[in-house]
Each structure stands twice: as structure tokens, then as C-alpha cells.
Length: 335
Image (tube, rainbow, N blue to C red; front, side, top):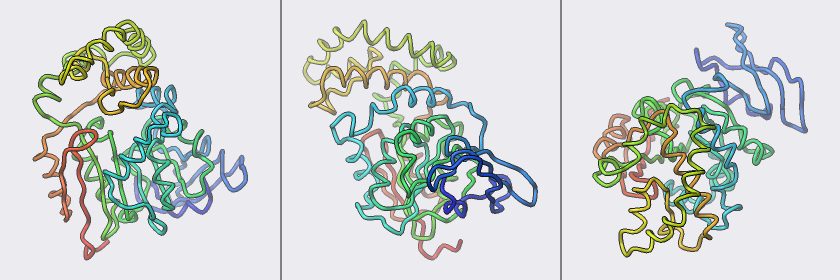
């Protein structure tokens, strides 16, 4: 972390400011190893690998830490050459390309596929994850001057409330223990006039009630990530020739491949190579089966969250990953 970012952080238990009590190792302007301290209570939080840590190393999201360190580059546009992460970031946020002067909060950074594009806007980006996936982001983006990476719990954020002009969270809320509470925690970070953009898996007939993964997940979600990943890769490798044939069936082919428990993006990314599609299939099939929590939502439920947060300009639309939601905290809302 950079010393100038200390003003963004507070103790997650009492909201008091933190101080840098130790900086054991530095690299240029960055503190690589050190410690933060809340001076009144004396509670300390370590800085390791350039990242302030406010949670234990492992949590309910250990599978995500495993997968994003294993597939650190897979979804990045610079690796795939497809431009899909940049497009999704633009399409879902609708914030434009110049956010200089903004503070933007990214909830659940994963491998950093969207972090890259948030940083490119010129905003100061605070990005967090409860898992060790923050290490994958640090390895690729940790030198960016406008990035503060933290490992933290969405229910106990070490950040000043009402401090962010933009908050976004993609592919995460349904994988938290209490999705609505997670959403409300993010809304508390919005500055007056601030905008939030999120998405959730849809609770629809095709995507939920007829989705094979929800039949299999009770058997897989408690498995060790290393074991499940090995089984997933072996399964995808074995059925891939069949999947390539099935996806050619007019209209329903890719849907049938998903029912075979193989993530298939051939329809969404028609220019992707076979090797790219298989790499994404391994990653996203594991992503389907491994999370401890997977709570899809109806459009009306998702809208009710925005209304409960007293947001305005609410939009709930079908999008890249299911239901996408946008809203704004009224400008006259007092901090």
C-alpha cells in the first residue's frame, strides 16, 4: 500500500482512523511489509505483500482464492485478446471513461479483470476481496499508483462510509452468506450522488430450476478446492470432444453443453479459439461447483434491495451475468 492511502482506511470494528505503526519493507513509495494500528484500542492489522489484511488468510471463499491464483490471467483482456472485460465494465457501470477525481470501490476483485479498466479511468480505486485472490491482483497491478488493495470482509469494511463516487460488484453478491446485507453494506459506502452498479445470478426457470449445477453442488461445494479442481479439469478434458459436437446443434446446442456441466461460451465469444474456450470451461465449471454459497435472485427481489437502500434512478435489466442493477444515492443525502 502507499502511505498516502492511509486516510481511506479505518478500523473495521469501531470506525476510528488507522496509523502506519511499522513499515518493515518498502519498494519505492509502497509499503510491502508492515503494520497498521488503531491507537486508542491498540489493535493492529498486518500489511503483507503490499496488502493490508483485515481477515484471516482463509475463509468461506477459499475456493475463489485458489481459482484466481490458478487462473490469474485467464479472464484478462490482455491475455484473451477479446475485450470482453472492458465491454462489461462499460456496459454495466455506464460511468464513462474519465473518472479523474472519483474514488471507486470494487467489491470482490477476483483476478482483477475489471480492476484494470477501473484504474484506466483515472479514478482512485480501492479494491477488496475476502480471499487470497488479492495476491493475484497485486502480482499484476500492485504497482499502480491509483490502486489500494485490501483483504477484507464485506460485512466489516475498513473504509470510511459515504466516501465513494462509484461502487461496483460483479459476479460476487450471490456467493456471499447474506446477499442483501452485502448489497446494503456497499450502499453505505456511497457518497451523496454516488452510483452503484452490481449484478446477481438470476432465479429463473432456465437458469435456476433447470440448471444442472444446483443438483450437483450439494456434493461438491464442501470439497477441497485442489481436489475439485483436479476432478473438474479431468471431466472437461474427457467430455470436450462431445461438447464441441453438441454445441453445433441449432439453437439449443450451447445450452445443452451447460446442462452437461461444461461452461460453454462459444455463443458469447464466437471469435475465441478452441483452447481459450476450454480454458474458460475449466475455470467456470469449477466456479459453478465450488462456492460455499450460491443464492440467485429474482428481478423483483433485486429491485427491492435498491429500494430498501433508498436509491434513486434505479435500473434492473437483463445483462451479461444475469440481472444487472444500477442506482444512485440522492445528492441531498447527509453523510
